[in-house]
Amino acid sequence: MTEPAYGWLESIRRDWDARALENPRAYINWSDVPDNDEAFFQSGKVDYDQYVKPFLRRMQFDPGDKSVLEIGCGVGRIARWMSQDFARYVGVDVSPEMIRRASANHLPRATFQTVSGGDLTGIASASMDFVFSFAVFQHVPNRDAIFNYFAETARVLKPGGIFRLHMKGLASASLGRWALEAGLAGEGRPGSGSRVKWPFVRIRKLDTWQGSSVSPSRAIAQCSADGLEVVETAGRWTVMMWIGGKKPQREADGVPRSSARVANTKKAAL
Image (cartoon, rainbow, N blue to C red; front, side, top):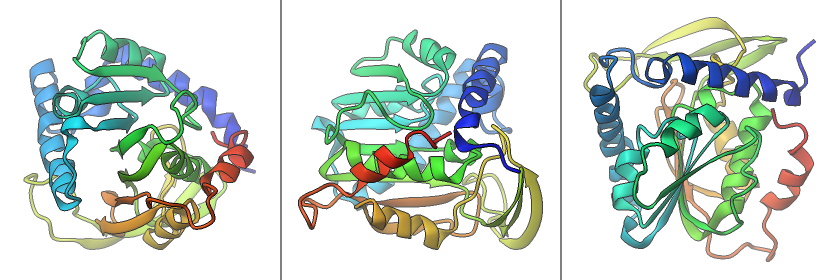
């Protein structure tokens, strides 16, 4: 029998606080990056330049006078660079220790706050121009909690705002506390080697490190259900899947479709 979704919440906070106290660089960064602060934060610039800036250009989005929310900011690896381009940066994380360390960097125009791990309570509705998340949902063991973040993204975005979310985009089947996953390997960090993809099947135990996968079609359908328009995907069927798009200027019925879902799933999320 699987653990109720809300049973993961305390485990996620406890485990990521412990990782932050032990060595946050080791748990946040790419494995091939040297374990020192200079290399750690420089890798954040590389990822920001690779995964954020080209998307903003494709969306014809000028960050200069805009606000951005990063879900799962950690100790501010990407925040250091993102906050230089945006008028207002907000980083949230489930770990109070990660937030303490991120805040200690005193980045200009940046604020950090702890969230529950199941929603974005504390972030006002329709207050953000851009919502971004990288290497976070892959550690969330409950798929409903991931979907609740989709709904919360829709809630906090301004009409016309944009989003880019990363997740494991594999096919998966639940086996209780385990998951059977299938997808394409070889889609790693740009410049890290061969980009040739080959199929794989594996079994993973779901915990606060190995989280749930979301298939491409399910991710797109869920975004649509929450009132988000997907305009691009990348890395389908890999652990590096991205979903990007925007929140329409107006809801079709005048009522945000995400509101009911957020209310109904808040207790179940993590």
